[in-house]
Length: 330
Image (cartoon, rainbow, N blue to C red; front, side, top):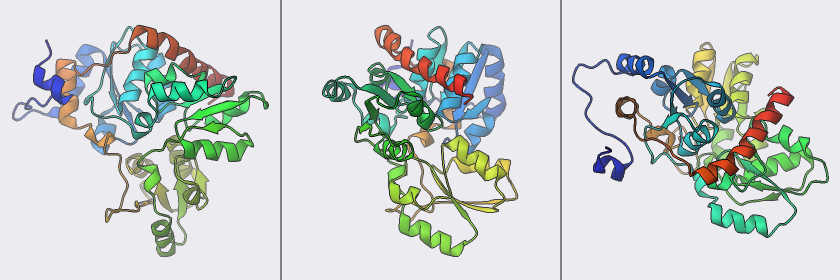
């Protein structure tokens, strides 16, 4: 039975026994319970280091669909746990903190999005993966920043399209493809905040540095970038490109994997507009801590559930995304 206090706060904060090797205990529980820990690149470095698999949204969905684990612990934000549950309804899906939401998902309530869709009859609905299960259930095909361009281009040129919820990503894809998708007005609270002025200041200090930007950034930031891409694409570029310095305009958690993969290079987080902080973090991703992960595995809670009728509708656009991605070799 779940403790009332846990339910009210959305996570378990039981004290970890003194002298516990918390990392070793987490790995032991994973072995005993046949549990897989998956982490997004934006989580804390200590979580990424402990995870069985680290990736962006596309890679995490692909891994969830293929794993034979009995339990998946999704260290990321809530919609990622929902996606795992939709793809693997028979598995137990755990998240360390139910409060780890997503500003993009919150910007697109399913009831309002349904009204928007009905106002544009005959349109194919393309939804970014950063949405709730209920919003995905209104969707024809889901995309991530790794495959959005290719999936949009796979649709016939004369297809009228609704794209939501990220307006910045939608504008970027419209620019690349020449499409005129109707865009929902949503945005990521992290990628909206990058400062063009501060990035240019960094560039003056580091003239040889290349600028990397996520397509959720605003157009003026994207226009400065030497490379625009998903977290996985930016990571790959940072490893393979000859440059030795990079200014990184995405959530600063990705710097953990960049530095690990290319320790001889320098990675500088692009700062936000309204802060004295030198980096830009997702406060939701940072809710996932080592202690919450330990308790989550120990008590097998919080778990993610999706209403069966919602899951039945939402699985189709997710599977369509995975099928198109497979076909295109993504």
